[in-house]
Image (cartoon, rainbow, N blue to C red):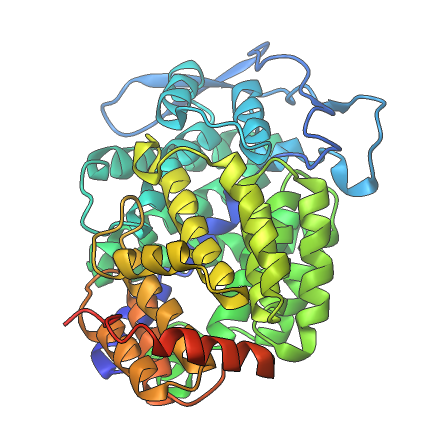
Length: 474
């Protein structure tokens, strides 16, 4: 990794709750048997109100001081981890609960419209502003040049911080939830300014986000949300290299402990509560990179699919683990399941994140198919994607280069593999992590990265040697 790239990576990570810490709260919804077991009872009602001043000179608003009606679990098949708990921390309105429940069941909705309506109905509830900002800011990770959401992102997160502070000071019952969402919205702004390369602001908001998450965890040491937030921070910053850790330290941030982070993510995934979907997703991810833990990752991924059979990302992650293990035939079947769930063309989804998952799945399906048989159609798809812009996934050409390089590397056609890795590293300007990954591959062109059989090597070498016209982007 070059120093310039390391600087971008580390300063982006300085947002702390940014790419990692903010991401942790995307899926606050109960992982009930099929997503239908959760019933949120009642509406937010202000039987007593306290007046809260948002900012000097702005309108006075009010917020309920009594506890929210607690959600209940219907008497269907549930486990301890399916119970919706601690709504004083997560502060779900009925509309937010419906939106999140639908998301983990793979229901595609207009989240921009839904979150705007929730903000209009409950402007004094910090969670509504957070989710409005988050469904927009996460799209910038897919296309950093996209600026159509910038104004809404800043407004929603900034208002969330104001409302969170007012609730913390005036409504004791919601104090932990206010601190939690204040931290999440600080993280959202840190993430936003990191993407926009305004690193001073990213650092400013990132430090405050980390402080808020720590305060919440100290107050609620067994709550899945704070555990996951700090687990993500500790694990990923703990895995940074010496140079990156030194830069974090110079920025005033102490790198985390990767072993503590691993444990905190495990605890979050095992905890009861509405965060289970995302906690389980990270639980799979932290095991997947380590060959000695592949069997754990596969086991947890199988659970993930069982609990969320209609959510495409559960299958995508399962397939990813299977590919890491060299189980390409099983991975192909998994990606075919995702294709049924996301059957529309990637560029046709209004929400770019669904289009991203659809296009990523098509690339992985093509790669797995070529790994198990001479699939000319899927090989042609990879070559096409290597030389054309992605429909909904700007890194699609980089990933296509990576997969073609891997296939050539399996075949021990290392010079050709190396050419694809170098081209993927040098010819595209989207996400930093993708180019860094390609740089690693380019530096070790002969390494066999994924387990494969002798028969696969012989077949691929014979097949790909018949296609000398397959060349990387110049």
